[in-house]
Each structure stands twice: as C-alpha cells, then as structure tokens.
Length: 301
Image 1 (cartoon, one colour):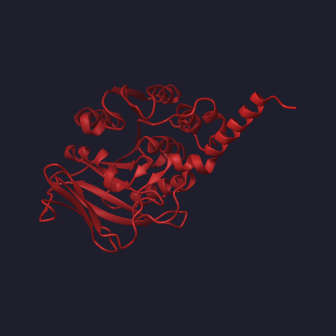
Image 2 (spheres, helix red, strand yellow):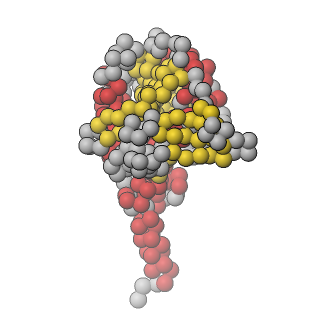
Image 3 (tube, helix red, strand yellow):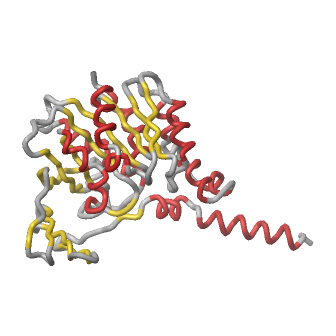
C-alpha cells in the first residue's frame, strides 16, 4: 500500500500540472480586453472628472473626451486607427501615432504586454512622440477590436505581420525602424528580431522576461519550470541577433524580476547596452522619455 504522504504529493503535483498546463498558463500569459465590433466606448470616473473614449464604427477611430463627454481631449500627436491582416487570417487593429509639428525620422513598432488593449497599452509609448518618434501600436489577435483567439503562437504571427504592414507604409520608408517590446512584447520582440533583423535597425527590450519557463518558475517555483511549455524563447533568439540592442529594466519591477533583464543582456551580442532604471514595470518612456530618446538615437548613429 502506498504511503499517504506519497499519494498526497502526487495529487498536489498533478493539481499544479493541470493549473499550469499550456492552456491554463496561456490564460495567465494573455489576458486581453475584447471589444465587439459595435462597441462604442466607455467612461472612466475619476475624482475630478469623467474621462471617456469613443470609437467610430467600422474604422474604430478613437476620440478621447473629458467633462463627461462634452469636450475632446487635445493631444500633441495624431492617432490614425488602422486595420491590417495577420498571416493567421485575423484582422488586427492598430493605432499609428504621429507627432504634431515634427517630421519623424524614426519609426517605432511597439509590441505591448500581455493584458488589456490599445486603450490601456498605448500610453506606455505615447510620451516618445513629443521627441519626434512616430509609433505603431497594435492589438494582437483576440485583443481589443482585433479578431481571432489570443495565443502565444498567434501573437508571433501577428507581430511578423505588423512588421510587414509598417514596412509597406510610404511614411515609414525613409525612416529608421526600431522594434520596441515591453514585458510579454519584449520577449516576443527578441524572437521577431532574430527572424527579421534585416528589416529593422535596432531592438529595445523593456521589462522583458527571459523565457516562458523562467517567468513560470518566478510565479510557481519548481513546478512552473516543469509544467510550462517553453515554445519560442527570447534568450535563445537574442543570441542570433547582431544589430544594436538595448535592454531596459527597472530595479523596482514587481512583475518581471530584474535578473531576467540581465540574463537577456548577457545573452545578447554587441553592440548592446543595459539601461537600469527605477519606477514601475514598463514605465520607462513615462519617466525617462528624454534619456530613452537619446539612447535610441545613439543606437542608430
């Protein structure tokens, strides 16, 4: 007869294995906000005002409002809502941000994190527009107005398709192209950069995790590493990328441990730089706008 302690341990392991199966872990990885095609928008109540976002039917063009919808929020950049196809057949929604009054000579393709949608994610990069960057932010399959199901594999196809889309735009043709990924998007960016490095001029990884197994282990020690399916891997891919790369990571990051940024940097080839910052997870462009701007420009010289 098997000892009770051994049986209990087996039950515990199988229970955690079920929790951390590829399906369930994918849910931990990707937590999208999804909008129906006829979704018109929503309001956000704050102590001082009611802020809102409204979407134009079919194009999903956003308009930001204040004073309970009575006034439009004026931005120092324009937002063009775009729709393009992913190689997986899904239609993806993106926002192309352009600075007002400045001609952009650097374009950023942004790969965002694992949750929310453009409405919450675009603000992580929009501060860079004040320094003349134009930026494409987009939602992966199953996020926001983008159709399809959100999976890690579909996100990779989406990212490669976004690169195809942005390379074909006439207003991008004579600019330097930087792939900038944050958190899950940072992990994804290293994989895209390896596969398509001839199509980009530089790579920036901010708050990125080093591998699926590493981030799984940080959530659930031991079992996370055992049960999580690796799939593509940033640490493995970045070893084959040979153009300029910058790794940005906050010492105060409570989502992706700081050592993972160091691990990615150590695996990268020259020319490379590590930019150690403070503040919250993927908050670099918000608090270090000018510093990141100068470092990106330096990478492209």
